[in-house]
Image (cartoon, rainbow, N blue to C red):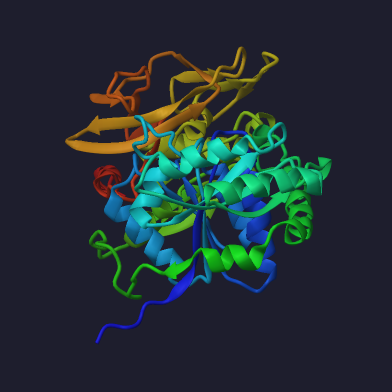
Length: 451
């Protein structure tokens, strides 16, 4: 007979729009639940890697992205089941508004909730709203029958009388009011562009602790857990997704990881770990590339915030330049591309020399956000990812690869995949956790270099 299902609390925190405070509430809930001795598994809808980092800090467990544009439904279900299995509670933070997707509601938080059969808790900014929240809740509850909106938590509520209006609205709509978060200066989340510096981390930790202190007083955590308890998805430990064949000699894969290079996906790193030995290193603090490196991965991050320190580490820059010149296999994305260029020009116009392995430079002057999902067609592969950067590229001789890069709606975009020797670079952050053919191509580069 099959094993009886295991019931545990699982829910998706969504909002009518960005700016409703769902990230603030998510971080507070993760820490408050963890303080109860629960193993809390965080997830994030969409491609964001900053929120997953802060989730991990708040919950004490690595957070995973659930993205239905970059990954298949089967991969998303498998990732969710695998990481929920060992947890007591699964908390999924939505992205943007509940129904906002790459194309209408395609890939939206609602689509993730439907795929994983997760109850939805709506986080509502009630600062300038009272009983009028009723039609808003009614609309979100009934707009799409594929989701279950079961509860609401209100943000920016400072008095019991204000919350009473909101409770009455919930009762009339059939959505349970689970509590509220007051508006306080100590709940202000640090600027996202502070990077993951020590100062920013200390400030973030203070916010999370303050939230976890207050939330149990204003949100009914016990009722939240009971309301969202349901059978967990089946998962059999030891039965993993298909993995790439492991070479007889495992390649050494050097991955940059420090305050300047932080934008990685856990599932990407897991694929690399399946086919090789990952050695993490710091372009900020280490003197040279790890010896015997067969493949180098330079992920995105904040090199512009650490341009002076990166520039001053001349021995590391020389080590990387020599590796690239000798035909070393490299994949550099966004911040990694910036680092391999000739220099980074900061917002004040000061130039900081970088590795110099690529004939380009990047500038933060007149910074403008480039943002959006991307589909990359290259060598018969279709790889998904996204762009998120403020810098501009000064192309002084980069050679584009024969690849087509399009937006979520299929329109051509300016982004390119560049190649110089065995160095591949792009502004696009790729997700290969569900597309291992790209890793095979990277390993092919390493083999062609005789490494």
